[in-house]
Length: 120
Image (cartoon, one colour):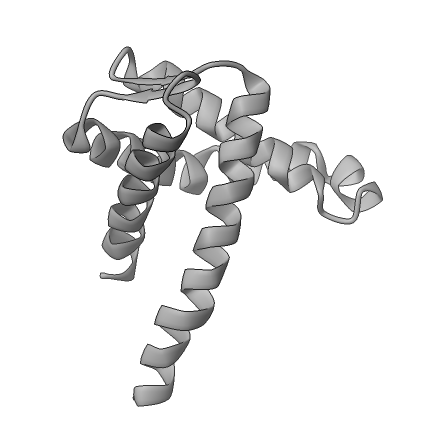
């Protein structure tokens, strides 16, 4: 259930960011955002651990900051796999979107999911 909630949150984030960065980030609609969010979740499960393992030395040297680059790469892979209904113009836009999504997801994880744990 938590995984599906994360996909829905990322889809809403995609819509919001596409509205804010309308010249550099395009989403056709909510269905495309949901599909892109699902593809991103699959890439985060399958591809991201491999990328982290391959880039472990540089990630250690940068004290984990290189993980933002890996997030941007997975967003660009999502752009490639989803097609023309989800477009990101360039690496730096993907990097900016990944930073914003990381911050928002971190805040939501701390507030929403930690409250659910305390209620149990």
